[in-house]
Length: 292
Image 1: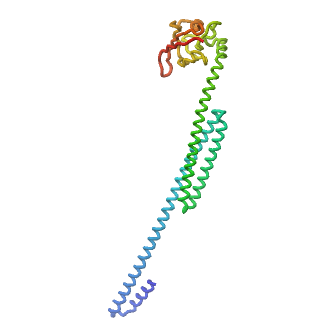
Image 2: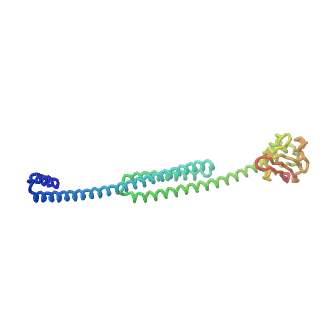
Image 3: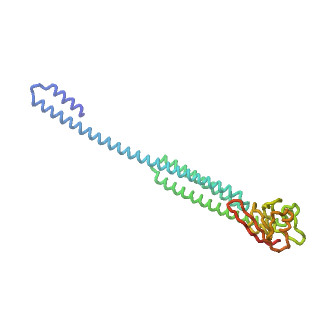
């Protein structure tokens, strides 16, 4: 309508006689007023368009914020899944450590599956959150609660696995101790027959210390018979070199002579000197034992 008014005004101006100055001035004022009205309308439309753009920009900002929130939740879900995978591996290791804990381990595996299912449900809930931006606040709170519950479940499983490990280690130590005590007599008899230790020189009224050494000088310790006097000291290690027995150097002696020095009356005490030169420790050891 404004444009049409302007065209009509321009037409009247063109039709006006050139000598009619008052009429031309009137028409010029009318054109100026029409232009001012057009400018006002244009400004109003520009303001409305600017306001609309700002509102749309604000809406886009909200959508972007929701997208970032969804991405963050997905990252937390992946981290949770990684921790759940670690918990599953810990459960598998616990299964092989003790038959006595097998039933408990199965329960832990079931709990791990429940936690994994909870994590899957959480991911599905996040997908629904991405599709329904208007309900993002409520869904986000529920997702946080589910994530917190899943984390607590993983921590509980890890603590139970750690407790099972400690329990299994204690059981293993007790079993090993009983086995060593039960096998002592058998190992002593086998060593005596094979000549593996000084037990091959033991007579009906004599005893040794359960020390296994090499056949030639320098006489290095190969090991100690489980449960024997040498083993009970906890000081002698494989690789230690035997230097003397009760003050007598064994370097020039044969293996038979060395074994005779080690063997003595049951309950008698003997002092042996060893040289340790392996690893970080380099020292001389004086070890006193009672033959049995």
